[in-house]
Amino acid sequence: MRKDITRSLITIVAATAVLGFLYPAVMVLVGQVAFNNTANGSLIKQNGKVIGSKLAAQNFTGPQYFHPRPSATDPAYNADGTTFSNLGPNSKALAQLVDQRVKAILKLEGPYNPGLTAKDIPVDAVTASGSGIDPDISVAYANLQAKRIAAVRRVPLSTVHNLINQHTDGRFLGFFGEPGVNVLELNLALDGMH
Image 1 (cartoon, helix red, strand yellow):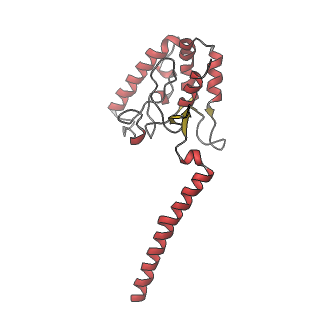
Image 2: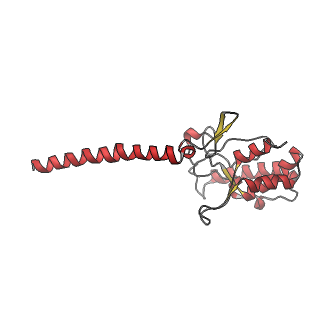
Image 3: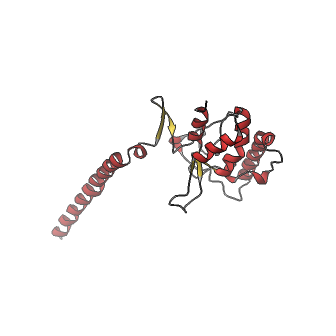
């Protein structure tokens, strides 16, 4: 029995050393060497200053900017506290929240998209993502906002559509998920136009 206890303790110590220290250290090293930008948060810098991350949404409210998906975090778009709303499809609170968001989008986008109705609004425009800070919006939601952006910035609609196309990420491995548009990168590109 003493032999079994000794072997068990040696196994625990060895497993802890390998899986608790060595393996994580190797993974950090590989991440820093092979995937430095991603391992450090995919930070976006402008003039040497960090202004955001490609992985986390930021709140843009001005009419000259593309708006992200709604946020479920408190405060909104808080990357330190990602969360989901936990409201199910039969939730009256979710139905009221979606109804408020639909009305807000119709008010904001309606003047630029005559005939816009609730059924024309993409679902990601009125629902938060699982993390509450999804940095991407659907191509459909970007296209819905394009006319407003073009009108407010006084640029051709084709220019805005070209920027959307340039900042659209395709499906992962060609068939997983849906194409998405990174809102922060797209808004930075808009600000960079001259």
